[in-house]
Image 1 (cartoon, rainbow, N blue to C red):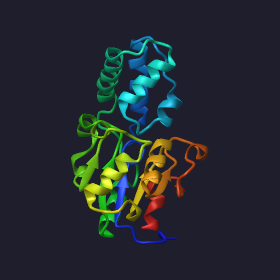
Image 2 (image 1 turned 135 degrees about the vertical axis):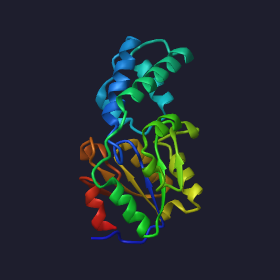
Image 3 (image 1 turned 30 degrees about the horizontal axis):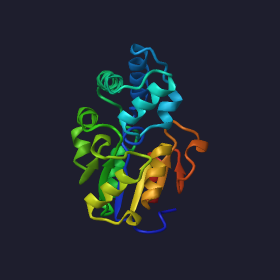
Length: 216
C-alpha cells in the first residue's frame, strides 16, 4: 500500500539506513574507550545512534565514573573518529539503498541526508555517487543540539525549503525517531539493528529498505 499522502521531501539518516556502518561505530567506541580505561556497552551505542559524538563521549566517561574533563572528552572522541575511519573503509551499502533514492527522486521528492556523523566522517565514507542524490545534508557537528533534539531535521527541512509536515523521514534508531517526530515529520523506521521495542514512536516499521519501494 502506498503512502497515504504525497510528501514533498524525503530525509534519510545515513548510518544503519543507507550504509551498514554501525558495527564500525560500535567497534571504534569500544576500542577508544579501552584505551582510556572505560568499558562502553555496544547496545548503548546502538541506542545513541545519531547523537552528537561529543555528547556520547561525555556520557560514556560519566557512566564509567571517571572525572569529566574537556581534554578527556576530546581525546576519547578524536580516538574514536580515528579508529572509525579505519573500520569503516569502503562501507557496505544496504540492499536497495540506491534504488530507493532513485525512486524518491523519480517521484519528484527533494532529498536530504541527516546524520549524527561528523562532516569529516561523512566525506570519508559516503560514496560520491550517492552524495549526488542529496540537495542538502546536516551533520552532527553542524548543529547545536543533535538528535534526539528536533534541530537536525528542522534544519534539513529548512535547507530544502519545505515544511517538516511535508517531509517523510527514514530512520533506524530511537534518537533519530524522536528527533524527526518532534520536528513534525512522518517517520518510517527500518529494523536494521534494533528490536521493535526500541523503535517506539515511528509511524511505520519496515524490515528493510526494499519494503519501502512498494510504498513509493
